[in-house]
Length: 342
Image (cartoon, rainbow, N blue to C red; front, side, top):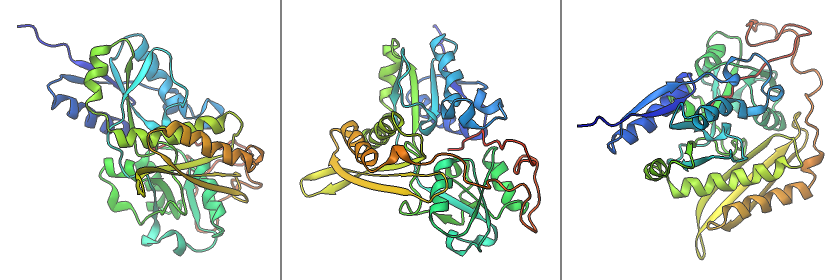
């Protein structure tokens, strides 16, 4: 009897990435497939430069996609929000499994919520989208750039280096760290990144057998929602560099199921936040995304200031806040916010 060749699943090396990949591997094994994980280092994991200076979130996917194309691995699992909206020739997203909670969460000292944090509290994030919306709340928070994995960022709060950090709820749930959450942020305050909470399973388009096998893991509603969000992002990226948040949901309408899509585009300093929403047919999610992007562009999204806010980040932490070498850049050194966490 011939032993089936295991499917080689490419994944980043972080605890979160391997946990996500193991979830997909488990689902495939339950369907009779042999699966082995292949850890791959990406530029996004190894570089100490700002993410925006080395190619954006796509740097996490580039190395893995290269291994797919050269046949080193058979399939890959990505955090969908880290996957470029432009398709990669020769590859296909064969499945979007059921999406986890897409919202952001706060992990704060003393169990505080966002509204309970005192004026000038230090809140860490490596995301311009979160920074823009946090500053736009007008709570007087000192938003600071951070880098590192989930445990590292939470550790900044435990050590007293920061008063709080903002992370994706899905990532903490997958790592069993929801006990650290002090508040789940309402999308009215903080819209998530397009695709946040969802996974993408990618393989070569010429592997029809594998495409068919992976299709069994696809969740149609999740795919519809992320398709709308990513279509919006793709349309905005053509003429807008400002931070973008978006959330699509399947809702019950008068004539059946509909697609509710909300988005925000903001200046980096939070002084301008453009929020718009539409309800559209769930059968045409790409059209819905492009329509909402057009509305935002008509309202001036392309003209928003995307430069770093004046005075950010501070050269010295506030009184009583410890300096951490990976957290607060030294004076005259470019801050780094390389790793994005799902």
